[in-house]
Image (tube, rainbow, N blue to C red; front, side, top):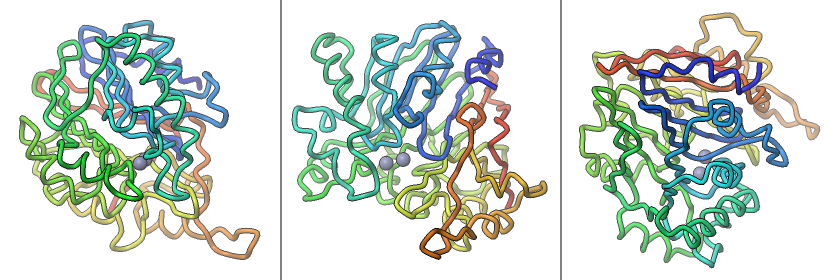
Length: 347
Ligand SMILES: [Zn+2]
Ligand SMILES: [Zn+2]
């Protein structure tokens, strides 16, 4: 199927959050009544041609206005195609921590081999260009900032000013440390979109939220489900139904989420009956339902490389199939739909 076909799933009376994650990137497209959109981060295929950028494809098909674009942080798995989205839709609001956009882009190029800083530069440059040419679009994100997108209130939960100064002063700052989780509030629906924020920052981020963040009804899990990015309160057990969505990531021999014992997927599944992961490997596609974490782990880790090492198989999902869609009614009840590449992992 084509991403554009997802336009048929739009329900005008609900808050809808599309999470795209084909295995090497993450992008969120949020639609709120009365028919306006917010895009948070972008991902796409090699070469970042427009036809591989899921949010761009969907929004082009829908034809409704994009009221805001947010870059949570300039890691290559969150930036591909964001420049094309900004140029195409000219959003009246463009949010990013200013530290990531200034003339000195050196700080974006850190964190060793874990990401490709070249992939982030077009998005950084587009934001810088629009901020200077259309200053009214500029949202220099700080913890606690609130903006209105249609009928929906969004709030940045990180970073506070002292964190920006502290991280910027480091020799090798990691953009994840300044990444921006977004709290979403519409009618009775509450959602936390966790960016790539590490665990150490979460208690303060939760404090910054103007509603009780752990009471969320939907969570885009922080940092592709890595163990070191999960906050105990945010993922504590609850007696209501909630949907947790994780986008996978792989690169440099590391793969997230990790399905092994004591790793991220296990602690996420300790407190919620199911974890939705937006894409999977070829081998996992052949596993029978229901899909448990243990079954996933054994299927996931065994692939011999040319050097004879056993490494996890890469995620190979089609972009148009690697998605999850959360649709909230005004009373906060949430309905989940997923693409054929997504998997629903049980403990
Ligand atoms: Zn990431
Ligand atoms: Zn990151």
